[in-house]
Image 1 (cartoon, rainbow, N blue to C red):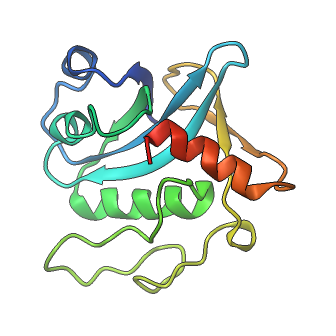
Image 2 (cartoon, one colour; image 1 turned 45 degrees about the vertical axis):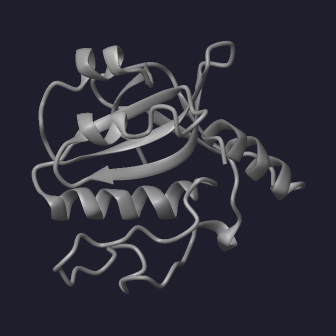
Length: 164
């Protein structure tokens, strides 16, 4: 799976304005860039139903995640489906529940086929998923999960990134 997202960028108003100019529906991930390893550690996946720029700015000061990646979507339904896929594939430790549907729709999750019934990847274990590389036109390649010998250690580390 490829994220097919732009970034990573610093989670700062000036960086958001410089890189997320389009007022559009879209998706984003919060985390941190490990420059030494060339990896992006995903801590949270989200969706913006009206504007990615404003949604990302709403996280400033509320999270310790220093970076973000994002993509635009052609519709709220496409953004919801991508958020669900990212949630199930990445099992980000900052997401405690299945993504919510936008108000007033009855869409089902494309992964678990039932809204609200979570079937997290790989036995429901939560942990890091890292992304290799920097911004690439074709997207970012996922590396995979860290060993789950101490799953709470991974969750705590990612929660520390998010400031939870």
